[in-house]
Image (cartoon, rainbow, N blue to C red; front, top):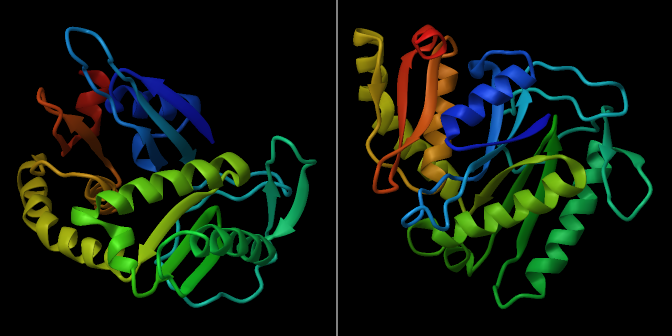
Length: 251
């Protein structure tokens, strides 16, 4: 697992693939910060990603890195794989995934129940190196916010917390919001997939927030041997391109 910063997401993916000695299609990435050009060169931001090799097997005391399974809010059976808890102010300790799930769930309940939101369901299930989080209740729609903007902010906050403390990626489901977005994007990218299969390349329309990450994961899963990456237009809008991988490496 490595943290990479570059001027564009494309450069960040390429740097991560070099650092982890694998192809871009084999990376599991979380975008921490999208790049912005700023105004007259001021307030410019680089792209920052956290990347891991999907198939890498770490040592026995570390979380294994592999492709996350489909989310389910039901608890899994006892997982014997040991997760290494990385804490800045506490000694390192070894806990099972089920113990880690309960710990995160209790901390998250304390956070949410002390807020103004009426939320009565909080479940956490840690599988491989990903925390699957399910939240529901009367105020779930308020936690999602208009067009998912509050969902995006909450997801970003949880990622910074859980990745910084336990080196975990996250999948956040609030009242089936993520599932509905996934189904919508699956239907949308079907013509993009068909065009890429026919011509070898294609691109999506402009996408916002969590839709970018969902589309990126689905297209990379469908095209493991192609170059699939997020691009940013001149006015800051994000879209995804599908192209021949070799042309981006040798071109």
